[in-house]
Each structure stands twice: as structure tokens, then as C-alpha cells.
Length: 116
Picture 1 (cartoon, rainbow, N blue to C red):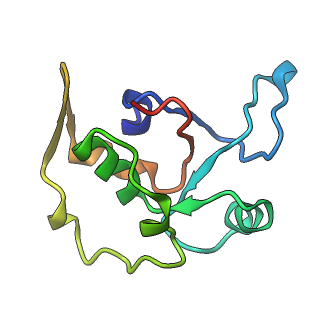
Picture 2: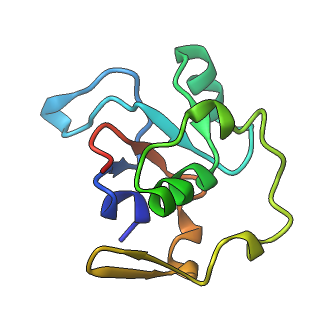
């Protein structure tokens, strides 16, 4: 399970501006990416949907609230030197998530409407 989903977000493989309810696709509110490249990233710029690093999701889990996206925009962020700035486990109410299980969210787009 993705950390973002544990926090209440909806994750999907498709990155779209408008929802298609008949196909079960929701409109995206945020894009979580590792780098500022690729077609989804380019679409996020065109559609003015914030493209943030996974640190945004991690910090939301740590703080219990949604951090301002401006501090986590993939264009403005320096790449992390290592994962030493996050603990080996992130504790949430009734859940404990191993660090290895959150590293796969780098290129997943995330709907954060229901976060927390």
C-alpha cells in the first residue's frame, strides 16, 4: 500500500486534468515525481497542477497535516543526497510503514483531496 493511500489520498496510474467517471478515472490535484522531466511532468506544468517530490508526502505523514506545495515543487527542490533524512519507519495511528515500502511512490501521481 502506498503511504499516500494510508494518509487518505487516492493514487492512480493515469494523469488527467478532467475526470472520466465511466472509466473510474479521477482528475488529478497533484503529481508526485522524482525529476522534472517526462510527459506527465510537462502536462502538470501546462495544466498548472503542482508537481512535488515524495518528500511532500513523507513530511505530511510526519507532521499530520498537508505541507505547502511551494516548498516541495520538483523544479525548486534539490535532490536528496540520501534517504538518511527520513527514519527507517514512519508511524501512523495503528500502522507502521517500512522506509523501503515508501520509495516506490517517486513517479506515482497522487490525489491529495482527502489527505488526513
